[in-house]
Image (tube, rainbow, N blue to C red):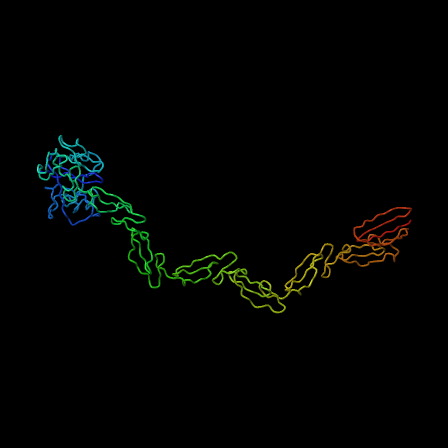
Length: 498
């Protein structure tokens, strides 16, 4: 009796493999495999993950047709052609597996849950099989028949001469195309031996010679895995770049540029963009006080600041010569400073009788070199350009009078006596005038005033001192009253007799 399939489950060796599972109670002595060809291919056409029972171990005929009664979800050659991650390719048709996380989900089918693969399988150990059966590759098998040669085995079986048992396979060569021998059972290969694919963008995996696993290798340097091979990266993924006067966009892997798109005739390509020129390449000018140079493509300006002490004027960095935007006088010549302060333009020259002040021609204010008294203690001198006066204080002990600093000889505006002469000091203290000769009126001069005599006869003299700081005194001696009065650099000395 040949039993129909109840379920199919993955078998893990290096990765997940797929095995057919017999319904409980079936006595099919030798499960085999059959693959049918179909036109569809999956996302990885080199990968083989498929399996089904076959009538013999030979390659199936080319015209084997899929079982039209199966619950199919697509045509296939191997399980990798199927859309679902856990779908199986059975007789050329994709069929979903019974997924599970618990034995309860497989109980109705008489199966158990393989937690590693997440699918229902016939057995995980010999305890899941009937007495006398053994669990191989998740499949319950009857005890193997002893043999010395394959001739001793049933059709579809071979003799494992090492174990001297009839088995489904002793090597993968005993299995149909796309199947490998695991634990003497033919199971679907994970992949086609020798084929390559990408595990991720940096890792290439190569199917092992038995088709049951992969060997991995990292792509060197900056190369990435593309279609199962390491390709050198030439650009940044997704970034547009310039190819002459055209824009090309880097592909998703960074290994090649897309088809270039030409810019308009009036545009140039720069930094992956089509731009319209804004200046003549190499041109220089001043912008915002900085020296600006037009780029090679004429699409932008590059600005640099001038060094200290220099300003940008006329498209170059020059020394600063004036205050930006202001008119000024340069040696009596009015000039106008430019906006940068690096160049000055002469204005209309001043005429005779005019002087340049603040960048303008105005009438002269005085004769160059003329002196006047700014006040009693300061002398003012007319500037060389006649624009006005500059003042300076007179030396200590002198006052300004008639446009000159003169030494002081008396106390300003104070009357004093020079013998019998009453004198008055001028307002600056630089000279005095005789006010009165007191003796002419029979008076004496005392403390700057003419005073009447009171019964005394005066006699004495007048003398000058080298210093104005003399002091006066009175001495009574031998019935004489001697007196010395000093003031303003002069002393009067004499005696008065009662």
